[in-house]
Image (cartoon, rainbow, N blue to C red):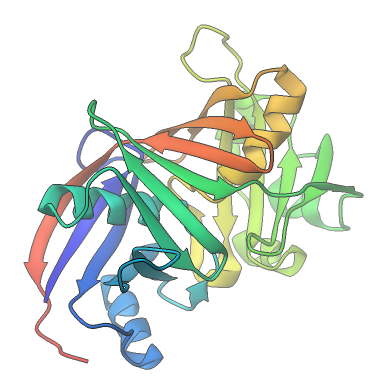
Length: 273
């Protein structure tokens, strides 16, 4: 079986967020233990596994995502990477519908090389900052919001972009405060920078200390910043070491996430399920 590594939410190799992508030639997923073993071997933030579904159903492909430690309910960058591989190989064109644990997701390939994902928008519930979060982050939150079940993060607003970029958090201490991890964010310091807000994402509870570019986090960032900035269309910069841009469009209870992807490794997986 061919297995690929795709850098998502970037237009150049070795940036954005790398995802493993394995298109299965079966009509069902192999054993969960084998899927987890492959993801652990890949040692990327997520590895996506997909198989084709029968025609005329509610979706075209079934899709699952595994970190090196566990399966997750929702993953944006690995969905983008999978849609990129489907387009690149000719296995799909136009809009592809994926059946996933978080519901039906869609990915639309455009002529300019971008891909737009259609994901459910996260609900946001304002909460008090849990004891210890400020100390674990090394910065005082301006506000804190809890996200929906398929994300399971705390969204923490910080004072400014420089604070977000300069964080050196205690990753192990952060693990006590949410199901998956912590999203930190602030408005862009320069309105002419080409992005409207910045973020970083720390997910110790699923084996990812810092995720480079997180599509699922933007299902919460988009409604948060669209309400603040008064625009349904924004661009977020995830300010990790690899960095990446996510264009977000809020449409009711859905968020459109647009980005590019680049295949950097195309190889053969020798271990069969």
